[in-house]
Length: 200
Image (cartoon, rainbow, N blue to C red; front, side, top):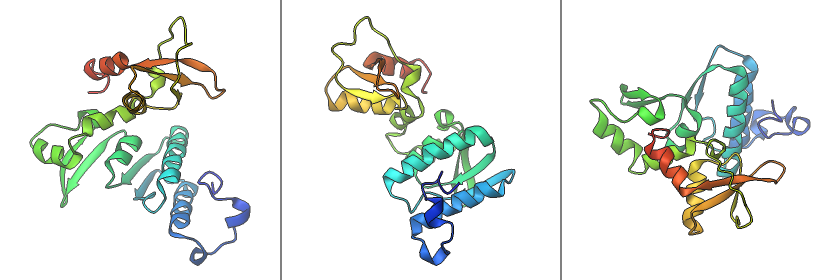
């Protein structure tokens, strides 16, 4: 479990809490929560003190663990991007009042819609693209010769859209773990996913 959260077991197994940095202590906390194997896990800002690069890596690793252990996890965060990345359902609380609870793509609505929209931000609908892997939308044209910009197959539609905007192009290539070009994601695929109900 220490190796899984990015701490070498050989180096950290005998350390005391006072010898850990804030980020290291949080990683140990994640490992301890998993080691106890409870039916329900409460995690309060578990990645809050970790730098952005390691936070993203830990989030991805944690989601892989969750696929295997299939436990109910109540994950407290103030980071909307993190909530979108981690959650099957999102609950929005304000001063102890539950304002909304649903799948991320269905969260906006109901009597508290105005407050929820303000809390989520104007770019929330664009952020929803981060929940959809490009692997679901790969197009395999007859020729891939002119594909220059490449993303890994674990990228999201948000990554693909960002790459297209930055590079002023209408498609990006998707490569497998072996580096082989699998196909492309086109701008119209992002648009169809958005308007076709896959995202909203």
